[in-house]
Image 1 (cartoon, helix red, strand yellow):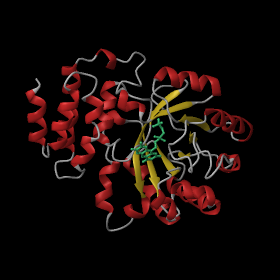
Image 2 (cartoon, helix red, strand yellow):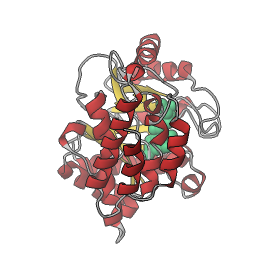
Image 3 (tube, helix red, strand yellow):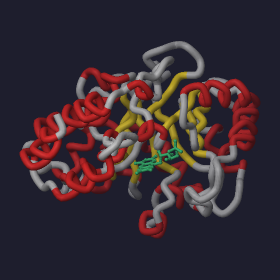
Length: 317
Ligand SMILES: Cc1cc2nc3c(=O)[nH]c(=O)nc-3n(C[C@H](O)[C@H](O)[C@H](O)COP(=O)(O)O)c2cc1C
């Protein structure tokens, strides 16, 4: 079983977000207010088992304060899932999660992620391959959506019949992308199916949770084991805290936290392992809610190097 940091129910999870939740950002969140469980960004197993492997390895980098951490994988070929899973055990991950929910057009066209909802034979082969690679040493879980074009509970029933350790459900169909509010009633129905056919599997609900309190209420209303928060972290890096400090943060404190993030980014990725553009995604999170924030963000968007970014931030000190 995956053991989150806290045994309290529900446990809270920081969602995997590609180009966002790298080791650097996870360390920042761990210092502010850690969730009970971290995920890596999704990493492609076919890429990992190809000559392009080295380019993907930074996505699997983590430090002790990001533990426990689950590696999230995606791809097409069961054999690559199997090989990668065996390697992930040796890398020290607490579990392996298979992405069966990403709605991206190109990815789905290639038969990966949410496309598994319509290719159940391959989905089962992939789950078997990951379980064989992990060989019972670490748990295997799945993150998915409510269905492809419409809600389809036969999909969740199939997954639950595989005795996965945890099933994380993002409360939208693939077709809905992120365009409609998350449907928590249906996540509750999936939890009821779990009770009936796979009582050992944990159900984690995901979609539009902006505060810890909201997560507690949803978990209580729908009987869920865990709550996953993604975009809510952008409006509050302390979102996992019982009492968030963010509302009381002064502009100087916000800028200091961004500087910490920028410094850690350049220390961790000294050879351009991550694009600087990924760092800019965070500007709005820290440089927000105070006089002059918009102008400061515009200046930061034009800064191209560590020293240029620091020079802009230092002017404000
Ligand atoms: C920028 C971005 C990148 C994402 N990357 C991933 C990913 O790598 N793996 C995954 O399972 N979901 C990914 N997601 C989906 C989130 O994990 C989550 O399911 C979704 O954002 C809904 O949760 P939220 O409303 O709390 O953000 C991503 C979402 C965003 C916004």
